[in-house]
Image 1 (cartoon, rainbow, N blue to C red):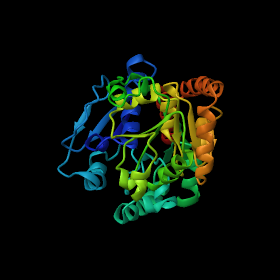
Image 2: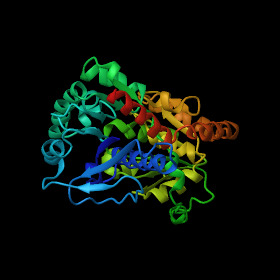
Image 3: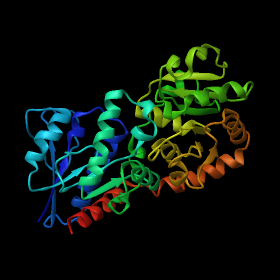
Length: 362
């Protein structure tokens, strides 16, 4: 029987995009085992984690074992190789033991090299040291787009034949509850609005979005911004934003689901993305998306989005006006977006991941 150890350090970490990828992929692998698509007599998985996990996955076929006395990187670099000695290891969150060769590592992007300003010095230096060694030592590398594959080849050395791009899923978003109280709280139930989700990471490019808002001036719709502290996203001029801007602060997934469902369009002017889940989430909710023409976004969104120049706030503003004033375009993008989002499932991601595992073990 093929036994695969999964590095489950992610179960001790706050959930960001990387941890959500790991959680959804493991759930999909469990579902493939449950359905019999993966033969439980031929392959088995076990989650190996530090003690003190904080997320319960409620799996039927993949047990969890908590081992060791260390935490964080020390557990991963010292204890994980010991407890997985002689066995194949699957790492899903950009890191893995430096000394282990019999492993696969998922590396989502090369942003620590391409956009270093978005990270602390300690974080940047560690990952700039770690990633090239993992790329060299691991049997296979999984990444999340052809764009990210090209970036890893560029920054971590010439190992293109070892890197397999596997696109993510978005079907889990439809299973999230919808909390409409956010709409009532801000009187958005019947109001046309543009939605954006702010972030303090400079890669997300919300400074350009803020400038685009100011260019819009008088409009017949609202602009809703979720997340992010005003001063850090919009700078000192935040108080001067037009009165059609509604800033709702941090929101839950259920509240975000409601905002996607009722928005007339979603704007995502990011400068660098290894994949870019938010536009697909919007599409899965029937919300037309305006996205930047940079990095992986054209690869992921295809012909189902309206593209903007992320370095040109006037172009972002023009695209917002265009889509908000054209109901036929919105409906066309809504239909294309729904069809596009349906192509991205976690079971497909899990199936392709298993193929890479088989290749690594040949």
